[in-house]
Amino acid sequence: MQLTDEEIATMTPAERRDLILRLAPHPAGMPTRQTIDRLRKWRTALMLVCAAALIPWTVYLAITLPSHYVARNWVATWVGFDILLLAMLILTALAGWKRKQFVFPTAFATGVLLLCDAWFDVMTSHRGGDLTQALLSALLVELPLAFVLIAGPLRLLRYVAIRHGMIHQDSHLWRMPIPIPDLYPDHKVPFRVDPHD
Image (cartoon, rainbow, N blue to C red; front, top):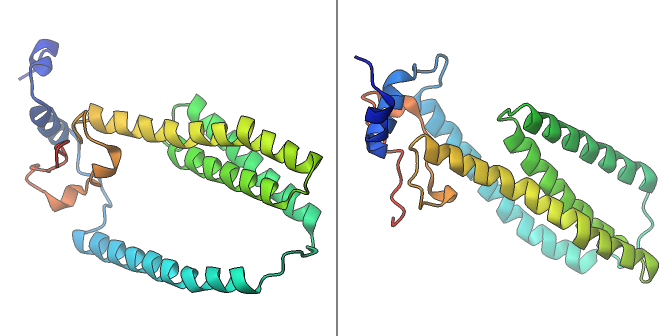
């Protein structure tokens, strides 16, 4: 049986999602549900432990760090950071140009690097010309570009999720579940998230 474009257009999002899942082959080499659950729990626990450890460390640094410090390898630090930023910008441009999904992590990481760059430029600048230049660079270049690099791929990811029936068009991206095919072998995957949940 072959479906026409008109028949597909009349299908509900749930029916389209079911059709996609029936046509898509089960990915070979997928980890088991138990493995996925175990990794998710361990990684979540690791992030929570790191966050808990970072709180007292941040307080300790706020109390003990000197307000003035002469840094070693100052030039190598900033040049190395800029080389990393340059590499990420190029990877993001290539992934975007070739329409590869690799653009999601590279764009997001590049945006975060630009936020870090703006923060450290402003915070380490001396009053006067250096600080003015750092503020202008942050406000006119780094922060707007970071916004584009972070928000753009997130909007694209949301569009892809809507297009594949994973979320309702009124839902927010953070409500989108991670699809794990082997959890629902009968293809009744509750991907679609109600926008009012």
